[in-house]
Length: 78
Image (tube, rainbow, N blue to C red; front, top):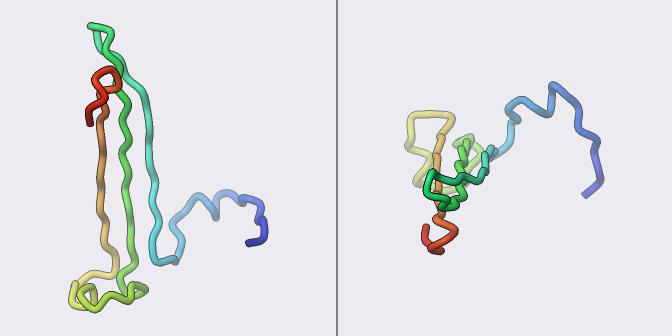
């Protein structure tokens, strides 16, 4: 893959590709001093570009999905 410089605002906008995603990560602490980490991610898929037969019957051109996670760092739990 050849390096391509980033060009704004073109590269900041949505692209005509099968899928794109954006995410936000961070770290938190509460008043008791416990530490947490989080991640939130939004996915966008352009359905006509997807090859899976089950997606062909969805009456929309674009599908979004979202997931997030919160991790208790001190207790190693998500």
